[in-house]
Structure formats: structure tokens, C-alpha cells
Image (cartoon, rainbow, N blue to C red):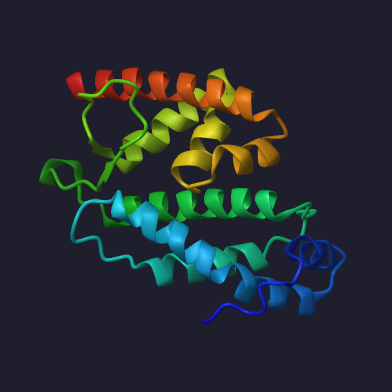
Length: 194
């Protein structure tokens, strides 16, 4: 699927979609498709080699879930990418759970957490399900830090995009991201030791 006219205003299309304009919904995806695929590719590069899910399949599954969202009031492009990031996380976690063999087989889905740890010699691979559990645990302690980490890690959003989605300053996003990475590193390091 090729990108449509890049001059189309994504926010306008999202607003029209929120008002029930299905034609606007159908116009949004070609405009954002390449960016979603780039983000899916980046996310899947963190996965273990031999992962059967392809970026196109991840984007298409996310799209199917996005078009079913009738209660979301789309505000802007950053919010759209934030919701897409959540969808991709859920898809990857569901996929990892479905592929996981019984515990005794020892087969798990591994992902790279490059950029998540605060120290240079951090474990680069963690189980996707462990990362998901750690993010969920962090959400009970500090929902904003968990959301920032989810958007940065699963959505590949920049600091500025994350700032717009979470509606906080870029400086605050940087602090929350740094703190979330440190917390995740400690949590995931602890779960690897046990």
C-alpha cells in the first residue's frame, strides 16, 4: 500500500473520523501507512530472530483493531500513533502468548530492550511477556511512566510525539522516560536473577 498525498492534514481526517466520517477513516490509513510500517519494523527488529510475524501483518492487524475503535475521539496525529503503539503492544503480547509452548519446554519469545536500560552493560534481551508484565506493574505504581515507556518502546514515538500524546512537556517526558528505563531495568534484572 503506497502513501497517499502527504499534504493531507491527518488531524483533520482524524477529526472527521471521530465525527463518524468513514471515508475520512479510509483516507487516514494510506497517509500513515508508511510511518506505521516503519515503527512496526523497528519494533520487530527488537524481537528474536526467526520471528514469524512480519511488519505488514503487524500493521494490518493494528489497522483492523484501530478501525473498530468507535469510542475514541481522535485529537491529533500523535494521539493516533499512541493508540497504534498500544495496539501493536497488545498484538505482540497476544502473539507471544499464543506461540509460547508449555512452561516445561523452555521456549519463550525474546525481545531486545536496547534503549530501555540505564546502564551500558544491561541484558539486551528479555522475554516480551516479562516486559509486558513489568510495564503493567509499573502502570499500577506510576501510570504516566508506564505510558511514556510504552509509547517510546512499542510505538517508537519521539520525545516530542510522546509529549503531545501524554500532554506533558518534553522535559518531563525525558525525566519520566529516564526513570521508567531505570525502573524497568531493575525490575527485569531482578526477574532474570530469580
